[in-house]
Image (cartoon, rainbow, N blue to C red; front, side):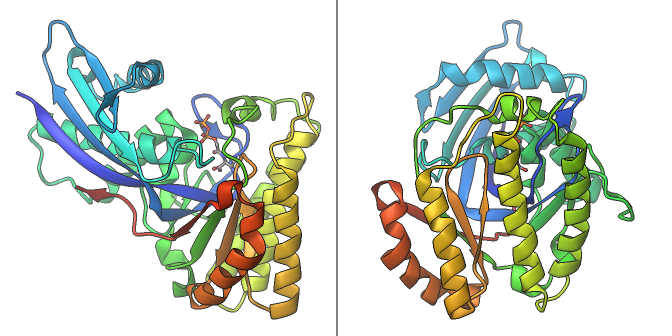
Length: 346
Ligand code: 2P0
């Protein structure tokens, strides 16, 4: 018998950054992210358990992609103790991302969370369980499996916002899986905008995996983790109301610049931002000062700039992007995304 499951799962953008880990994708500091909407993966998984000669077939948009198989196999080996049927099954995975490959948008968060959702759904089918979908423990398990695929993926499974990692004073916060955070933020953040300015679509010179490793023994290691713990408390407080956007902006921008400052100040320094990223940041500061429109930036592990702002400023910000910021984008390319409602069975 073949079991089939299809899920749409979004990417996410960290406001407090996960940078530095131990064990198997256990974070050295807590992080907090917005769940995105337009940038997502659609995945379909076919699983035939009890195969004497199990095959793994990985497709992207209907075309075979054997290059993706090693990472998926090592993920499956890592989680086989939790899904005993996994290594005795023939599996076919077909996925597609809405964001173009090479747009500098990390696909591991959306694809690994989609994979965790398909696997958990199929685990329910294999074990003839029907009542588990949407139960909080089920979602925690999805988040934990996603984390084992890629750390940041564990935050993609919850709507609006997610917190990952132990935070003092927040019961239920865990290093193993993310905690849904939508109920802890003002409604202004439920449809917050994220316009992604694609500065470069070149392959990154240093992978995130290597970046995490370089945090071990970094001169500012302990200072950084202490800063992240302090910043997450400030951010959480600021997001409870719509009246503390100044504080929200200050923490977001500080976290983004700190992430890249850590890259530049380690034992093996590296630079992922580009001159255009800096030009955009300066233009954001100029525009915000002149207009009082509360737009701010954050950065992922790459040169692209995410502009974050309330939905009520959509029109003014779009006009400004088109006139002042498109010249800094590779081929003029940008993506209009926003905070979203989380994964969806399709
Ligand atoms: C984050 N990043 O919090 C941070 C900010 C990049 C910059 O998580 O090795 O792909 O799979 O656990 O999740 C990128 O690292 O790393 C990342 P793994 P991941 O989103």
